[in-house]
Image (tube, rainbow, N blue to C red):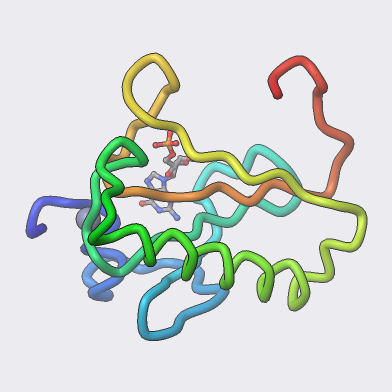
Length: 113
Ligand code: 5GP
Ligand code: ZN
């Protein structure tokens, strides 16, 4: 998608602080971190949100979670971490390219999930 911010980051057209990359997945540090560790994990294939996952493309979600487990190891997130995917306006999704936030490094609120 030519007008998608995260597709531009994957293509290297917009710089990012890369944490992990493989054939299917790209991960980079959030520009406005909300925890000491705040990493975004995205599929290289453009999918707008969790609402657009189908039988045909659901394998990319598994690939993202394989990457999340690897990143948890390489970033030494031994104290635990939270994975969040905002979907749609009420959830506060601002970038319409499926992404998983990894948040770690502090004790998190128990009020939301
Ligand atoms: P959302 O609000 O859609 O769940 O998450 C989008 C995230 O992307 C936000 O946490 C925001 O800080 C991050 N973000 C937006 N633009 C950029 C950017 O240009 N570079 C990086 N690294 N993160 C970005
Ligand atoms: Zn995209």
